[in-house]
Length: 160
Image 1 (spheres, rainbow, N blue to C red):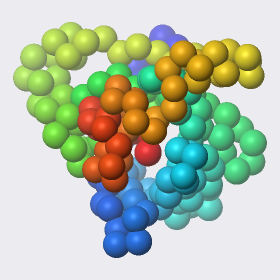
Image 2 (cartoon, rainbow, N blue to C red):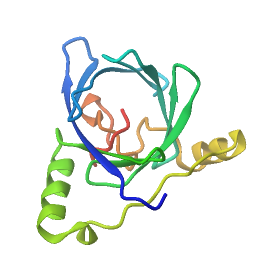
Image 3 (tube, rainbow, N blue to C red):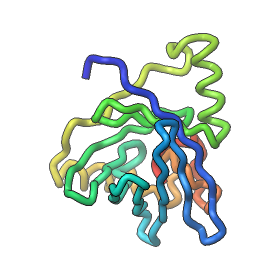
């Protein structure tokens, strides 16, 4: 990927039933639910649905309802870069707001260059990532944006 990513911000709201309502800057709305195994099932107001799974510490696999797969990489400060060219930024957490402020004042170089996710992984590579880094449950560097659900990750990334 050689072009600059397309940035989409979002804000999460924890609902009374334990699910998350996510509003994106492109006007999309999404409802997310974490299972006991750590997977996040989601559906949006445009008819799409899918499952997000943490593969180790920083890589997220998104499987759409139609079977298509993309990968994302948590980049700190609430930023997740997806291999479809989208950079999602969490504005509901301090990390995302702080990252945006620092990048706006000093340029992206100060908060670090973006690390791109893999274009594809074999099932063996996915298993290796999970074995090396564990799942998002209890992994404090996972970038879990639902850390206030009881997890201990807190960089405000997109997973969750």
